[in-house]
Image 1 (cartoon, rainbow, N blue to C red):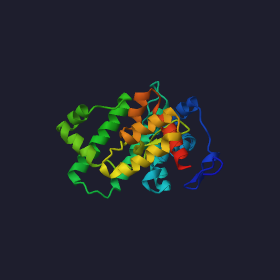
Image 2 (cartoon, one colour):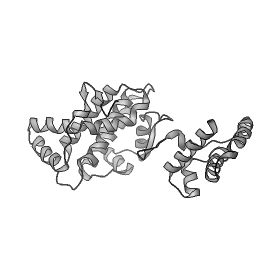
Image 3 (cartoon, one colour):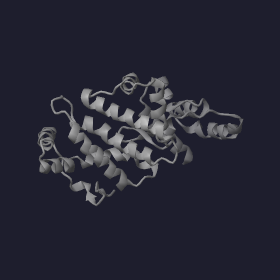
Image 4 (spheres, one colour):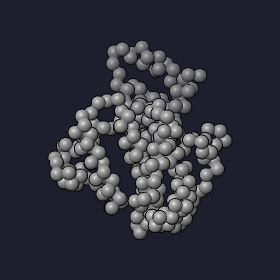
Length: 254
């Protein structure tokens, strides 16, 4: 990525058009009526949306071109199924569809072996979930999915959990535009006897930090609390905790 230019699948995304919401709705109506030109324009005008979604999966080591193409399939499905009579932005509906398509692709390429019967149950459950979401614009409950499949709720849960891709500690879960919070930042650091030398070194190093930085590092690394727990205790956002924590560690390293 250079100067906001991203070339993926041979497409220079910096040159892609941006569509206003009214344009999207108009084009969707035309596309759903069989206008192929409107369909192509709509797809082209939403490729940046696909690109923004696949950024969530960059830490998995997958080929971004592949994910981009899979995401485009999700975009096309969203275009075909979006209900223009509902007062909902197209992107609000399209993003979960794109994510679902990518996750389905990742599940199919998962190295963990899952029995065919459980996979079939999971895929049928996902199809019902997507259909109900398209009809209601809200996520159905496990009970509703189980009722449609005529099986126990526990079977639905087991099936869906069995095909979920493992989460990386470096998967991003939040970003305020400045700092990104990863799964790793949510994990507590429970100390044991093997860490006492590191604790002594850290205590010496934090003497030159200000009171808030000392308090945050003490809560995080001495008491093993997560950033979310620290943010609730001292009354600031998790993003601020992340920023202060990283700044304090940089001072210690210096």
